[in-house]
Image (cartoon, rainbow over all chains, first blue to last red; front, side, top):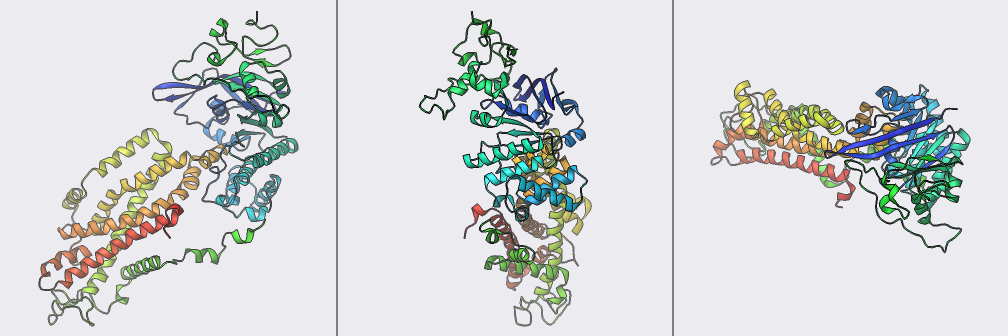
Length: 329
Length: 289
């Protein structure tokens, strides 16, 4: 079975003040229909740029995709698709939920009006049919009183309610994939909970695949089946959530887990990953991106490690990882 | 949902009612606006006199119950002349701002949203117009095309274009970075949809603030141009042309130039206040009461 979303060797760079900023470097990942896949990494790791590239949302005049880059979404080549085809893809094949729900709705129109505009753009349904569909969708995302809600303006809703409206908008045209770019980061824990709950249910009941971009290991643990760890624009580890939490391979993943509170071992001290990410402006160092912060760094780390497949199917990009690692003498 | 009825948006007649002015200042401004429109549409409803009616027996009469603002050098009623001149002022104020908006709003939306070369070129043109002295520009145009209502509207329209353009461009740039615009794009909205649905409705507020202020400027510039003889020509009446004539009688009939000046001042002040009030109504943080 071919994957719903297949990203191959994606490199994205931006022109910033005369220099090239390498946001994403050679990232490959796949999402199959109905899967819940996580992408985790700190600010500046390139995870959001990677997510936006799936719908080619960045300004084409400033954004450059690397020569070998390819993104296949439901069989269509996103990076070479003409604009009209791209607009059909957006919202219909895949849609996106953004971080800040306070700014994600147009303050000038009612909720119903905005949802209806999305349906009008993509479907030939009658007015009554669209209305029925909007009410059903609002109910599905746990928003009470949809008949009343459609006449409300965004400022009359709470952040959690708005984010659920965004979820409703994202799945309104029944896309095969929802890309959620830190959908819960701006919400308090109760609202986070309800948004994850709603996304999980839409995934189970309708088979909508979810690509969850986050910096929160807790969200990954709760929501995802597979996870991709990004660092310095590269994919450094990829595999099942169970495998990563049980036996993380990359020193960065180990650091991330040591820095995450664990309810099962509340007395364990949290350890921060020391240092900061190296800049990716101009030419990118040929060394491993994590070398400056890595406790295991040795001479071999002067050349960047490729993403290797371990015997159990897990993937990691580190000379020192795995049972027969070249760096582990 | 608790409190739903209390919070519910007003519907139908209720919504219209919410638009009615409530505070004394805004009521006064609305009345002035209605008066100006009435004078522009049908000045004969407001005064029994004809503005060009000559009466040799009552030249330069001071204000009286018969002639509220006195009479001019030909015995015509000054109030009637001012009221009949209102039509021209309204035409100039609305015409020039409408003309400017017609050009500047689409240009500003395009420049602000697309950026790049189009933005660069349009901004240079706008800055060039802004840096040109208004009066010098008006003299050049009037000298080559002749003085008329159309010329005045054209000149002021061109002068106002960069002022509206810069506002729209700046607001559009800010909104383009907003979450709901990105979100709309991610849902498949095209450029037209984004500009007309997501950006324009959200910059109508700031536009409503600058429009009355530019109208005030239009009235003052018309007065200035007519005063130096570059405005509309007799027998057309404008407040500026009344000022030009009335200044000759400031010793013998001081109420005559004062009346004309006062009306012009009240009109432009009212428009400036209207802009401020629109601003306060739109931006709750700046509400004073």
